Length: 74
Image (cartoon, rainbow, N blue to C red; front, side, top):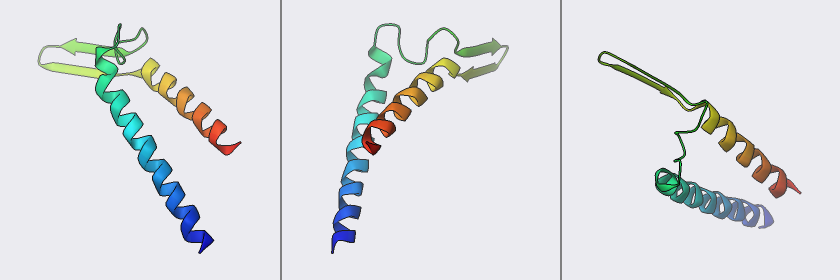
């Protein structure tokens, strides 16, 4: 029975994390400076073409998720 309890707790944790990420992404555009419009994010506009790659944003999100994973493992 303990295996199912552990899996249930893990699913609840994943659900909470997904809700928090969803709330963050929903409100990120309203932040001053806006997430996704940071220095280092690549945005190229040409005639009829637009390319956007949020490099700096990806690095920041990766660092935050790595820190959270480290803290949860402890």
